[in-house]
Amino acid sequence: MKILNVYGSMVDGSSAAIATRFLEKAGLLCAQIESFTLGGLQINGCKRCLSCKTTTDRCAIRDDITTIFDILVTCDVLVLSTGVYEGDVTGNLYLFESRLFSFLKPDFETRPDPSRLPPPPRKILVFIQTQGGVKEWHADIYQRYESLFWRLGFGEVFVIQADCVDHPYDIGDDVMNRAEEIAASVIELAN
Image 1: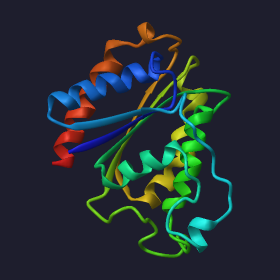
Image 2: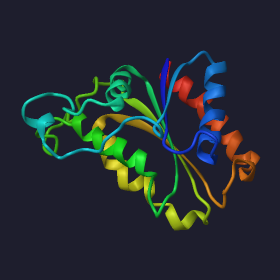
Image 3: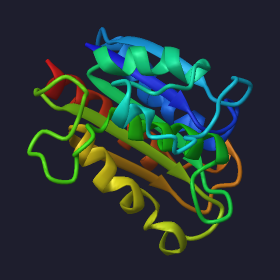
């Protein structure tokens, strides 16, 4: 089983700490893991050129996301982690998610098979979000991206949200234990 992990925030931040705990457990259960930290990579957002819908079947932009997307095609599980910045995912994760548009077929709105990602079994998504404020303030962030991930072919989705967290040491054992439990569930589902 292959996991693609994308840190959308600082690697020493709270969302990365939860992702790392998830990955440690998954690694103990024999998952192959490839990780990328978006900060420091050369990445661009979608230019809305529509080349992926007209002249090619992949994103026309060539940068560090290209390598990540090559792995996304073959992975079983995608792990995304992000802090909340100005009411949304980090800027880097936003750029990454904007480029996922290239995996949708030209007439994705009307087709029963809208994704260019390999067909079922559907991929698994683990979405990890941390924030300094209370849970209700940003409970809608994953929901803004939910239809995109559904169209891309992600069948099982696990959302881990930690609130009132400013530093990794603010994360409660309940959240870290949940990350480990979800890792075990994901491994079982993917095998």
